[in-house]
Image (cartoon, rainbow, N blue to C red):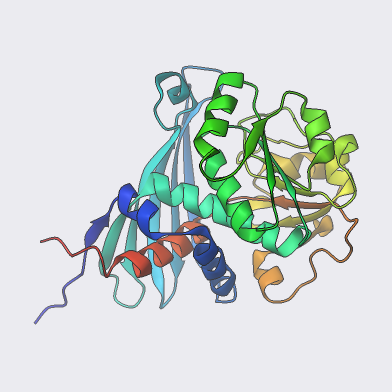
Length: 324
């Protein structure tokens, strides 16, 4: 009798109901102790309706004997003007032993989860355990997820501030978070950075927003937005002052402007990237003193999509019946 797949679709609503950041961050920590997946990416770009181009990203990861999968995602920055998600897509998960399709998963929710949990794991490894003040720079669709992931990683946080170029989007995010935590809008970015224990930045900027001169000893800087060679969110002084960590050396060091540009300028070398998640989760040193500035570059590679899909499938498969 031929083998049958247990293929079904896991909707965004099901993902939101079933998956929680404390559990996903812990799953990430465990999965980073496994053998890494083989990765293959492709990126297509077309002119967009605004200053930023539209992009279509395909990311495939194969963890031999465990699982494999592909995410297809679009990034259309102009969607902000029509109240549509900037990031959209879908994911297909396959069994790593026999290649059978297991599930399709809402790609937008999966992307939010994997990106935020990636930063949450970075914060758990690198930020000070006594952090109280979180600054969220950027108010896009990912921002509330990053806030929740940092709160999961550091429950000691009791103050969240939001900065965004557009005040209306900033205020909408503050209102959306009101039921979960007392969040407040801020206008002065330099002042807010200087007061924060954790600064999480998720923007589409190519000109650095975060200045190293603003950072106080002990700050943890979480850089999420840059994902192309021309994008960066922190200036050379921030890079120079910080102890630098990444989620994966393979998907960040030679791929993203946040590191490529200062390396090309001689500000740092590749050796200044001290460890990635695989090394940190195997016991490599992260923060070694409370007054150190730590910088985590979230690259969001396909291996993280696969980890997230594995966790989503494990959580949802008992409550989502197969479809014929």
